[in-house]
Each structure stands twice: as C-alpha cells, then as structure tokens.
Length: 414
View 1 (cartoon, rainbow, N blue to C red):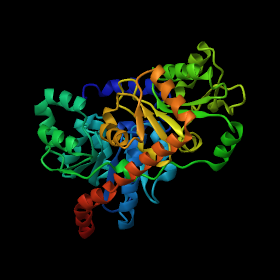
View 2 (view 1 turned 120 degrees about the vertical axis):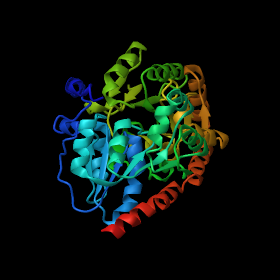
View 3 (view 1 turned 180 degrees about the vertical axis):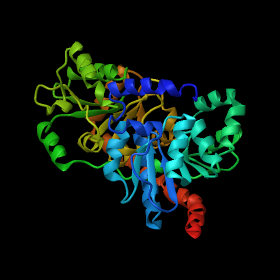
View 4 (view 1 turned 90 degrees about the horizontal axis):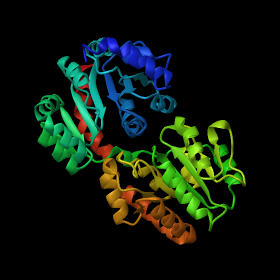
C-alpha cells in the first residue's frame, strides 16, 4: 500500500467522477483532517457503510453522557449524508483514510484516539497496525465472519493471526462468528449479539407517506427493497406475470444503489411495463406499473406503505440485505437463497414463519399472489417477524457492558 500511494490520486479522481466521493472532503481519504480535534480522550468509532453506521449509532448515544469527544468515520458518501443529521450532539464525522500507512499516520497524528471501536468486518491491516502501534486499544464490535470470508482468511492464516492478535477484544454477533474469529487467532472473543436488532426502525416522512398513500390508494403494492443488479429483472418478470390477474398491481423497486434508477427503468420498459422514477419528482399514477424509488433515506417510508417486501441482495451472490427493519415495521418478508451475511436472522425468521424463501421470478410471483390473496396470512407473517426480532435484542446492553471498563479507565485518567 505504501508503493500504491501515488496511484490513489487517480483512483480517487475516478471515484469522484462516479459520485463515489465528496469533492469538498476527498482530502479526508488521504488522512487530512477536515475539523480540529476536541480536547480530552477521544473515542473513535468506524463503520463501513449505511447498515453498519446505523447499527453503531445507539452505542454512540450510550457513550455520549460520559462527555468524551466522539469521532465517527465511514467510507461511503451515502452513509455520510444519511448519518450526519443523526449524530449525537457533539460527535464529529470524517471519512476514513485509505489503508495507506502515510495517510493513516496523518489521521492518527491529528485525532490521537484513546480507544478505537471498529464495526463488523472492518479488518483493514494498516489501520489496525498503525493504531495499535501507538498503544491505542482496538475493539471489534458487532463482529461477523461468514464461512466464505473465513475460508479466504484461512488461506492466509499467518497474516490473519498477526492481525487479529492486535485486537484487544472481539465482540461477535453469534457463536459461529466467535468460533471462526477464535480459530483465526483472535485472543479475546465474546458473543454479545447483533446490534442491528436494537436499532430503532427507520423514520418516515409523514408528508411523503401521505402523498404515496393517496396516489396508490386501493391498489395492491409490493416493495423490492435494496435490490442489486440482476434482481430487478427477476422482480419485473414476476410483476409481468402477476399483472395478468392483478392489473392494478404496483411494484416499488428501491435499489441499493440509487444511481442505477435509469438502468431499472430500461429493464421495465423492455418488459413492456410503464415505470416512473421518484428521483425525478414523479408519484405513481394509474398507469404506473413499476415505481423506481431511486432516492436515499426513504426505506422507512416505503416499508410503512407496502406490507409485502422482497429483501434484495439475496437472489444474487451478494449475501443478503438487512431484514430487521421491515420486520420491525410489520412487513411480510420474502428473500432469496443467498443470505450469508444475515444467515442466523433469516433462519430464525423462517423458522417462525415470518419470512419465506423464493428462488426465481416464478416462485416470487406465486408467493406474492398468495399473500395478496390472503391479508390474514400477511398479518400473521408480519407479527411473527416482528416478534422474532424483538426477542433477539439486547446486544446494545451487552456490548456497552463489555467496553465499559475501557471507558471507566479513560474517565479515571482525565
């Protein structure tokens, strides 16, 4: 990475052209601070993207009364835009530097964290090495390691062990994650559960929800949430099949990456359907078949509008997206077979009959038709999903309890 440092300027420029970096703050990716450092012991938390950032926010809220300066870093523009208005009072946000020793040294020289809290699978080698080299303890919270990732790390077991032994404490989501981390060489591992179960449901814009309810009134609605390339064609094919029997059906597609809205419109038009894009200010009308919700931060509104939700990232080999949010908002959940990132959650939801597996356009269409014909079944699935995720909470209390000794130590040093 040291040798690659000169190439990062071109790489960041390419990301800027694609809207993947903030032009006003791109220097932060090279470790140049955009804000002055507050006085006192600083707690640095880092989470990769939207889901991980929102999962760690309640932990920051729990730490805030101790009056430590708080710094949160992430790596995506989307997460930054969504999180900054929701940061606890006094907390600062920066983009995480690229994993280049010189950039990280610059970042750490400025911020001088007293404790580093990393979320989930953020095992960046130089970040961990440079931080621990300065005597800063690193805690990995909400840690997960899928079987696929474990198999890749095991090929480099010496490297994995050298890296993980630098982490002071690993707080794993489940026993399987804990076992894999221990086998790879993490010295102190405890199971505290998944912080995402303790995250409040995403908010809704009352005015936006009212507009959507008015323009879709009386029509059956299905939501495909957080879809990835390859899944929209399947969802659109399922809609095409169902339209013959349910001409009023409207399918809302909220892609994981909103910039793909135009691509989804093209797929729908090629299938002979009528799409409109939310990013262009359109609301669905009587002629709309596919409503492309290519905007950010609106899933809370859409989950409250549609009670039948297909959760994306699961029909393609992505690993699945988070089903906890729709479960908390009374939705019946459909999902595909590729859910390694949330395997334990989906297993529990499926066992409780709060979620159902689909494999292709035909099975998706059949499942949607069954649910639309039986509102009682939708209510039963939604209640089972909500009850299941409710019973799986408590990770926030356990995680805070595990890191509290570090916080008390810093309090005593003040």
